Length: 210
Image 1: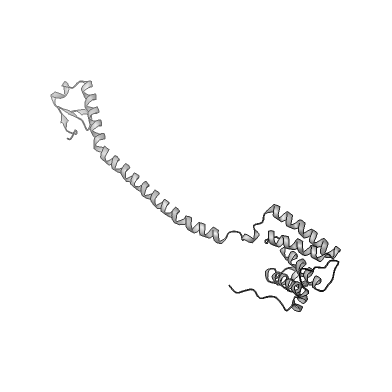
Image 2: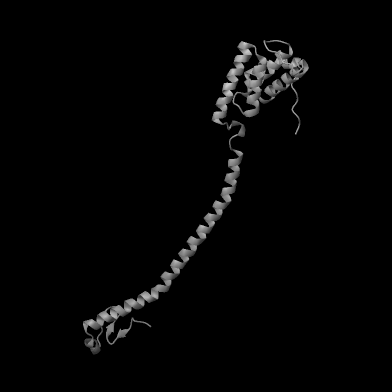
């Protein structure tokens, strides 16, 4: 229904009275009511358009949310894989208390090895470290002391002697310890010191192929 026509001489579009004599019959109250009716109808005409825009906006936001969620799900596994590849080396993850205990044993082993010439006691301390904390930060020195102590016991040197192993067994132990030192810690200062002794024992033991 169009409200822009002349209602008895009053034009709703312009808000002015026409030339019709009937216009004089409209009181101000009627005019206000007519304007209110026109405004209400105008809102009704515009309502579907505004509602359509709201629906389109909601659809757009829902679609955008779905796309962002899909991207996030795809990125999560790749990020996890990257973290797994670039994570810390397990050999560098050390328990602080265990490190302290190992360091104490190493200091005692040094004392037995260098000052007391008590090679049996030095080997026992090194074996404790090797069994309880194989990732010890100073494992290269542990292998050095264990290998050299075994070699010297095999030569009947030092203040202690063992009846548990023969000289040949002690030399084999020395070769095992020193081979591990050379293979696992090629840049260690102790590796250079054992080169001659290891060659005399037959050279490094090759690592088994996987």
